Length: 170
Picture 1 (cartoon, one colour):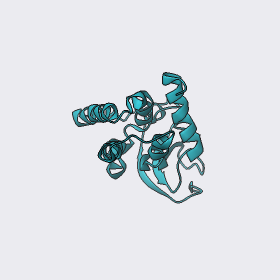
Picture 2: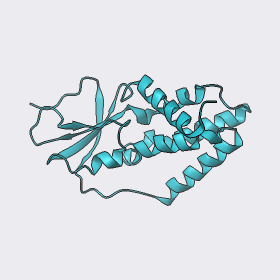
Picture 3: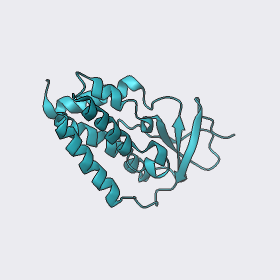
């Protein structure tokens, strides 16, 4: 019996805990561009919560380049810049919750298992941490689901909590 996800999902990757991390200079440059745009449009206080979000999903873009969050965030910020004003209230958090990368999930499977041994919760660990777990023998698999993983309201609450943790209530 094979594992069948409850919602439609597209398998994008699988690997073992021995896969090396992937880092590029181009990604570092994109982070600096995002930081500059945040400052330009008056959202510099979002830098830390945004970095936490981007770090959580880092390396999934290797398997899903069309859903890479860095160009998506940069494009979102460029649109704000063209409009001449930053989003009000929690609108930025709402817009971040529309990123396609939030639809990705991952789990560890043992050979022949029908269900995952351990599922990745992005609110508790980064994708890199998940991949490096010294957990069950077997492989991990990542997929794109039809819904945000975990639930959209949990992701939004997590984003806003990270904002408040760094900046206090505004």
